[in-house]
Length: 420
Image 1 (cartoon, rainbow, N blue to C red):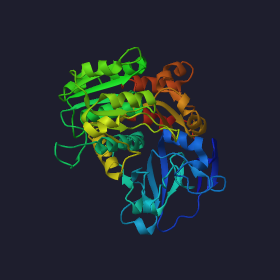
Image 2: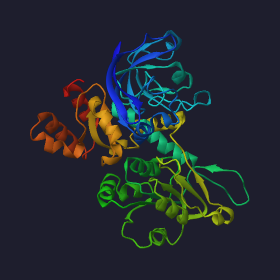
Image 3: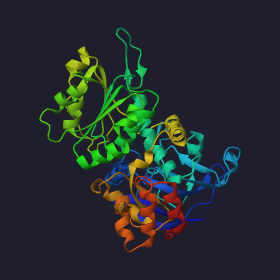
C-alpha cells in the first residue's frame, strides 16, 4: 500500500512524499491516520536532525515520519495481535515506548510510523509495550490531544512532598495547597489549568501568570475563575510584564505566603529563577518547558534546598497510564483540551508549519492528514469565509462552540475538505 507522509532527512529537511509501505509482518498493524497535532518537540527534532537523542539511524539513509500526537483507525492486523485488535478500531498512541531502555518513539525514530502520514505500519514494540490504545471518544482530534494532555497529567503525578521527619514521597501536588503556573496561558498551560481544577488532587488556590494580555484574556474566557470556584478553588490570572517585583506581588496574592508547587512553562532563565524564589517550605518546582539549548541553565538557591527542603522535578512526556487517564477524563467531559487548538490544516502544511512553529502565534496546530489545506487560524475562518464557503461554514460552526474546534467542525472538514 502507498502512503503519503512528511519525512525528515536532516536539519530542517522535511519532505512530503508518496512511497510504498513494506508488506505487513505477522507482528505488525497497518493503520490509517486521521489527525495529528504538531508538537514543539517535532520542531526541535527538525532543528537538531541527527543530533536529536531519539534519532536511531542516519536520517539521510533512513528518513523518519514525523508527528507523534496522532489518532486514527486500524486497517489490518497481523496474526500475532488479532486477539487484541481488529480492523476498524479507532486508536490513540503513547509514543514514549521505553522499549528495552531505548528512546525510540513514533514520530522520531521510525521510517514507517509517525503522525504526519496517511497510512502507517505500527511495529511490534508498540503493542508489546502496551502503547497502542483503543480510542472510544467520537472525535479524532481529541485522540490527538491525548498525548499532550498526558504530558500534563504526568507532570502533576511527578510532583512530590514529604511530611516533617519522613523521607516518604507523597506524590502529586499538595492537596489544598497553593499552585503557581508561570508563563502558563499557552496550549500546555491551558491544559495544566484545566487539569489542576478537574484532576484528582485539588489545590486551594491557583495563580496563573503570563506577559501577553491577549493570551491571558483568552485563558480567562475559556477557563474563568467561576469554573474553579465551583470546585472550591480560587483561580487568579496575573500579567507580570510591568510589575516591578512579581515575586512580592504573587506572594501577596497568595495571602502573603510562598507556594507549595510552582510550574514553569517557558524555558526562560528569569522565569525559572522567579519560580525558585516563590517556593515555600518543601516546595516543588516543576520545570515543564523543554529547552532547545542543551546548555540551558539557571540559578537555584541551594541554601533553601538544604534548609527549606526545596526540590525540583521534570518530565518529558507522560506514560501509558497518563494517556489512559487523559482519555478517561476527556471521555467524561471533565477536560476541555480543544481550547489548546488555534489552527487547522492539511498534510501539505506540515513541513512549513513544523519548521516555523516557534514563529507562529497561538496554540496547537491540528492536521488532518488526508486533506489538502493551508494552515489557517480558527480566528481567521470568518475572514477566509468571505470568499470561500468552506471556511464560512467552519466559521459558523466554531462560533457556535465558543470559537473552539469541535466534533461538528471535524465532521464538516472530513466531508468537504479536498483530499491530499
